[in-house]
Figure 1 (cartoon, one colour):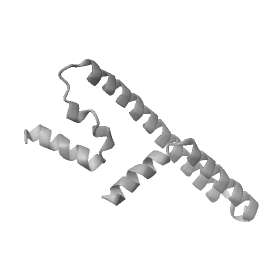
Figure 2 (spheres, one colour):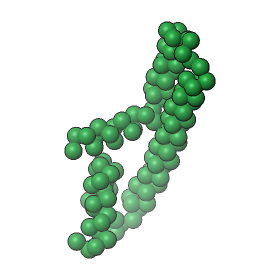
Figure 3 (tube, helix red, strand yellow):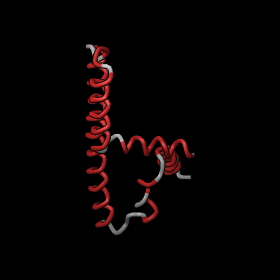
Figure 4 (cartoon, helix red, strand yellow):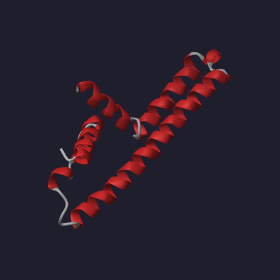
Length: 106
């Protein structure tokens, strides 16, 4: 259980601006301390890491926007179940299990 929570937290943290600052500090350190090893392979590695962070940030932004829209729809619909309103605090596996139970009627 702790591993799943840690992975979710890490995934969220990689979408924060601090992750880009860490990447910049890593690249600067590489350039300062071992510039001879910063060849095309190293640049490709940094570019891959940067693109991964950009994609993670875009996905997080889209997910948060979608969640805000759904929250608003739940608030205005009087028939919405209250127990589902805080499901975004659960781990992905718990959400999947809840969806499976709902689909089977259990």
